[in-house]
Length: 206
Image 1 (tube, rainbow, N blue to C red):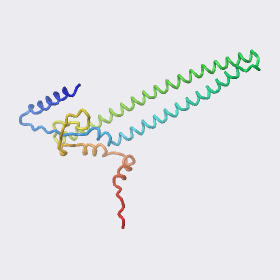
Image 2 (image 1 turned 180 degrees about the horizontal axis):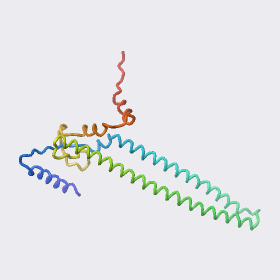
Image 3 (image 1 turned 90 degrees about the vertical axis):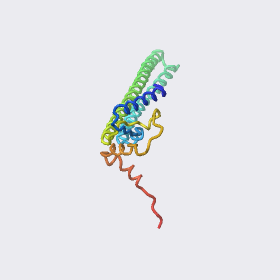
């Protein structure tokens, strides 16, 4: 949907609200969903969980890469030893066969690592999308509760790049209230470090 079409739809929405009832007063508020999302304590917790999963994935992938390197070193030694002119033909054939077996293991280990990495990256990406969707849903619910309690007819997102809001009075911005509601039940451990940093003031020299 291009910008001009969004503007037309936005204008039609406002007209519909204005014409819906001659007696009803249309009250519009704004909220910065991006700001609210970034300030939500659950967002930090979700990021921490995803970071741990990424770290575990990297560790497991590193283990696979180490196993691949060991197999490759063994393969190269077998390949070199198979060319030793001092050994018998039978021994040379035996070592070549062993080298071929190691090469198959190498290819299998490489494929295993690639499959694991691709699956893990997709899984983490899906988990991230799911977490974002879930948290935004919770934020919208808080916005709806705030809007209903204050009798707002419409709440516009003023934080997105596609926002239609050119100007809004600070009095109509419910973002601080929404953030307050979102973090009302935040665990102390999740917010203590942030709040302590905010409260720290430079000591006055005596």
